[in-house]
Amino acid sequence: MRNEIADFKNCESIAVMGGTFDPIHYGHLVTAEAVRHRFHIDKVIFIPTGRPAHKTNKKVTHNEHRYLMTVLATMRNENFDVSRIEIDRPGLTYTIDTIEQLKQYCRPDVRLYFITGADAIHQIMTWKDSERLLSLCDFVAVTRPGYQKNELFAEIDALRKKYVSHIHYMEVPALAISSSDIRSRAERGMPIKYLLPQEVEDYIHKFGLYQKKEMDEVKFMLSVEMMQEKLQSALSVKRYIHTMGVSQEAVKLAEIYGTPADCEKAKVAGLLHDCAKDYPPNLRERFCKEYKIKTDEIMQKQPDLIHPFLGAEVAKREYQIQDEEILNAIRYHTTGRANMTLLEKIVFIADYIEPHREKFEGLEEARRLAYLDLDMAIKEILEQTIAFVKKRNRLLHPLSLEALDYYQTKNMKEEY
Image (cartoon, rainbow, N blue to C red; front, side, top):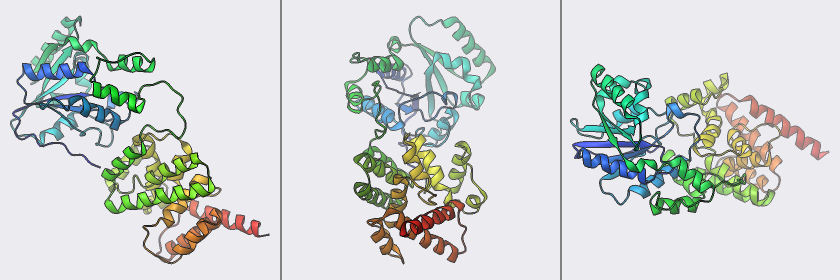
């Protein structure tokens, strides 16, 4: 996964502006510029949130949309920058991790400011490693006019006395604008102009964000182009070429055996079938634990069998795929299973016969059968795969054996 941010070695002071930015609006931009001016800050870094630990149940727009809207909103200010540091970091997001990672890209004596809403100051001690966090950066608590300040000032004084901390207060009129209000207005078809930059408004309209409408099951939060761009960052060059081959082959098979809707699903399932394949072992284990993926004894002894089951969860969480048929096609593309759906068969076969595969015994026969009869092709592929696995003294997953038995029996019945 790409997890790079700019080098800020020339900056003596930096302010971090975090938020979901769903969407980013003038309140965020005015606040950032006001803080920059008051504290003479060299650079303000906008960091769209990843998966905040305290907001795990909150539904937000996909990371890529929020990131791109933030880039569009800030691109005309040379003192603003945008970082993917949180949206590219796997797992739950903690501010302390962000600050510590950011410091690696800065000079040792950099002064960091963390901009946050005033309400967060009341909960700051519940944050991960809060005492250390208070020592690493100054906090700037911002409020909109009319906020009850007495309690906030008392909290700030208590924190200053008890911990080594610098907490500042600012009132920003533009904070009366809120992302939730903009989303609500967009959903009801009301104007959002002048609440956010024109580029962000155009982006919202282009992708139909925040509009209340019935979603067709083959319409996804991410476009195919955005999926491909994300996969290029997540996969090795060789794996990405294979992925594109599987997607193209799956579409060809779907055009023969399915409907236009099947073609769209096949394209996406093919693209995402190996989305977790290149995860290093420690990341794979971490995600399996976090996503509660049960690994049986065979999968534990042969970790390569884990990636399709993990990939289905990654497709659901990271690529916003909700269609169970697509998720199952990803989940069973390696082992297969008895009585597969059309889409499962197509992706299973496409993974085996895609055009970039180096030649091996049985490949051409599988390709020939794929365009005659899917079930015959599956039987052939399972027989070849199981023979190959046994020859190498590797472990067979029960799902593959069940699938072979099912399709051998099915083909025998059809012959009589």
